[in-house]
Image 1 (spheres, rainbow, N blue to C red):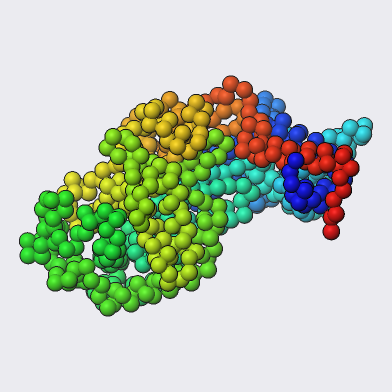
Image 2: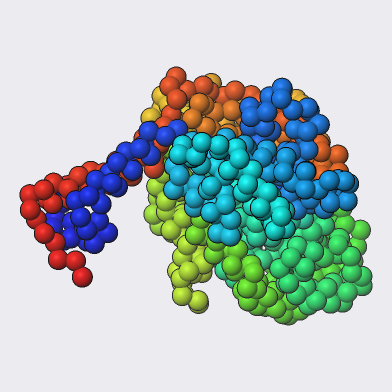
Length: 634
């Protein structure tokens, strides 16, 4: 029996034998329900509109539900219009208001259709869970509309009466919006974002705003997330990388308008150093600052093994060459005073006084930006380097392997770790980098680890030998820009390797999957996201517009419901405005990854294990009550 103190605490919540019985029956019923639908997305890279649309349409699930409910009873145009309304209720209502002659009739028909849809999507959940998803203002009305009333003989008249009253009092549109939002919510039971919310696209801040209150999600940090987290922590080298990325992808507005970061000191510096102010000048200026900061960090942390990324001191200013990897490369500079005006040949790694001032101002802006800090705290609260969920292993990048395909040992401040222990140790330091006391050695080391995770050769988030920033800017020879990947990417089809990773995290190699992103799959060249017979899934399909040409598609969603796992392949996204005006949608194909031999229920999930443990505890309490034990409850 559980100790009496614990049972006494439990008895406060369930003070009678009958209350315990009721809860046991309730939990046992939940275990018998079909498991909820999980959606997996990765490498969103600031593409807010497309991300928002995929959540609104449930990666095509809502369209499927409409077909299931209405089949051949409604025309294709009616079903398309209903789908658009569910995705964008407020925007679609604006159009309907202008075009419909008999609005009350349209409201009546539409509300009946939406109620039918809501009944369908809520059928796999308990009444309690459905009730929690209801908007407070309309909870009673919605509950009446979707609940079967056996005691009422003329049910249709009852429902018609409710709907006509709602229309008569002018609340039809509010109810339509509430029903649409609830359908969207119930189609996705749990959302997994497997890294890289930031960079490339223009709306990472909008993505984070939209999911701050999402009903159920987790995040596995990507390298593009971790560098922003380091920047928010106050790491100068991470801040320089973030600003460089925004300049490179022409997204400085994300910093200035999205987060209110003051770039005036940097702009003024560019005008002074380069005699001009454009995106290229900002990109070049902040890159040189970044390289100097990285040089200092690399020299302070020899255990990082990144001496090969010390490049500024390898420049021959007379010959206009640089020695990288034991080879001389010609630089594309015409005049160092014009192209690298802030680099002193006598001491190329030293920041100038002006550069120091710029970075100090940027550190202040990043660490005092309330919105950025709120977003990063959310990433810490909901995120981690990896997650084991319902028998699957989720991580963004890779498991670092050595040349023999074994787990690569990594020195983390004197502790040599590999495999799962590497992930765990790195996460401890990431959290110290943000939450440790300001100015402490722990915080400094943690910030450095965040930068290492962004770009380090043994980083599980990066997975490459180097990040060729200097080479891309100053060397025209493409050979110099080659970024060799970790051995992990050669072992994607090797079952022994994949199984060893699954076992390392305590998973059943017969049923579990590794789900990750980071590397865009070039579908048009024949790449498949399904590796190792379906044991490993790389679901980066190029969500970012910058990768559409490379991949040939516009991203994947992995959907796992009670019947199996399938990949939804998204075609290129146009715009919300066009979709609303024409009742169009993202065209999506489906690839079946796995069909479960038996339908999975809540009892087969992590949540099911928790509920079974609760039931066992409640049965002990019930046993105590039946033995006459009485607990003193304050």
